[in-house]
Length: 320
Image (cartoon, rainbow, N blue to C red; front, side):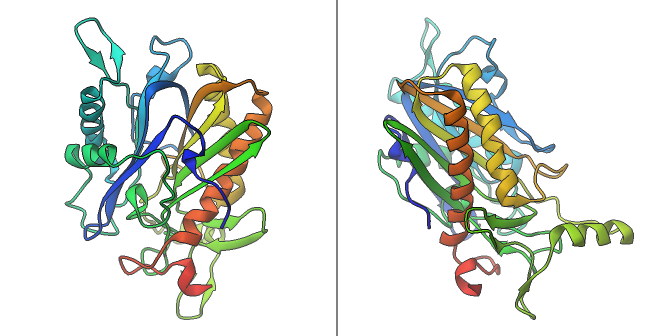
């Protein structure tokens, strides 16, 4: 396991809510005083909320929360519950007649693992926000990782259980942290250790299969594979960044996906990374981006290392 957690960046809170029977859940990152934010969406099948306002030329300069959730597009309902919680706390964008909490978010597809009729909703969003705390070390089958899985090209019989992972890195006063809800079609690697740790797993013969090689065969046989993918993440930093800078950090952070997930950013993924910046430390944007990719890759590995068997899926802990 790699060290550190998302909440190592001061000023943010992290909370989770999940339905352990239906295998779906939500993770909420709160920054009630407002953080500068950006986003980069690379997958071709995203489900997102309020990402347009994070473009550098648009009006709103601060966000008050971000959510990562299961439930596919249905899961976007959690945003309303988070807004209600923040409104009650007095956190939001002043519109004269009141405040409007700014809460972007993204979803992953977990409907094929648990009960597809149960999805994160307004109530779960509120409960996740209510549970948020300044120090959170939750990893594995929690929140948005409750129903997450990887290695799905041959279906659930060969897929593995994943979850959420966290990590952080520090250089002097600069802190860069991340949280990842890992729900990829592809094979998963611990980049720094140079080894595969999850993916398509042949339980009978106790060995990994190669997703890219299988994909080539699937195309030749004109077979279809499960579209149930998408890895969604958030990078947090205490660096002083503009909205444009935050968008660039999100872009650079996708290198962590490229190092640790193969294949990634496919037509059946909605891969998305948000960035939040508190603005406390002067830092070189290139260094922040380099560290963002590093912590994303580490959080991906931690999502695998901390997951447990669930929903008929085996985990790394079982096969290691």
